[in-house]
Image (cartoon, helix red, strand yellow):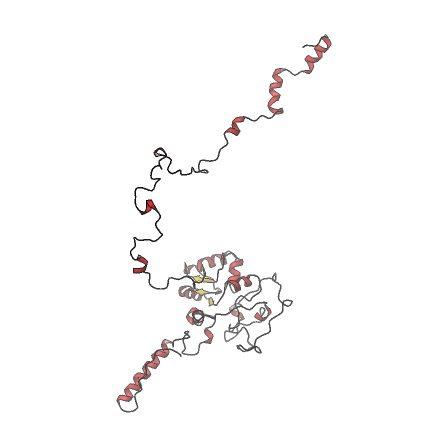
Length: 346
């Protein structure tokens, strides 16, 4: 109802906005939400799968036999996995021959020479210092270490820089390529736990109890008197200490080729000792000079790396000696001794 007085009517006309101005200000002053937005919310088509409904009539497509077909063992019941109708299974009559077990397989991570050369060119690896599993992991040249590292020779011609590397295993081609470039390779025994302690700075990266030159003043014996004293927990080095080179460059060797231990802490100063190989298979591998094993110095002249069989050179020499004895016996110069040699050391 309009105001009764003209003054109030004039006041109401000036204060009330026009219809056109109200329509212009409405989108900026109020918020509106359409109901269609909420009604259109639904999951993507692949998010929900319709459950298979069996036995709901022929119109569903899975009625009557419910997708099992007519008669037979698969329709009436279940067939055990690997069942071949009652005959002797094929894996029994034609089983696999040879060692198929992976229980004793070691988890070794592979590393190729072209990747090492790439890291050296980028300055992420220092070729002037020994490269161990610690340097490889810290520089991200190796992602995960497992139970050790095996050096392979992919694109071996790309290796131009002399490197001195310590790994768990190395192929013959990789050893030849590194030595041709002027470097050296040493293989030694590692475990997953020992590598973890190396990463924490609690274990020497490459020197252990049986390493040559690790304990020059202490005889290699199992007696308690000859074992070096281990530092206590208070005397253990700080785990956040700066990086320590595991193996000095070649110029830190003496005239006989032994490593000089004055350029870095000796193994006795670490909290834990690096373990040595104890299984026969590992000992024979690291005693082989062809593998550049760290136990190759233990071999005597003419001896082989095997702990059970004699070396081929010894067997050849013994066979030649038997032939000479047989000839002497035929000439009557000496008695012939019949002896069958199995080639075993003991």
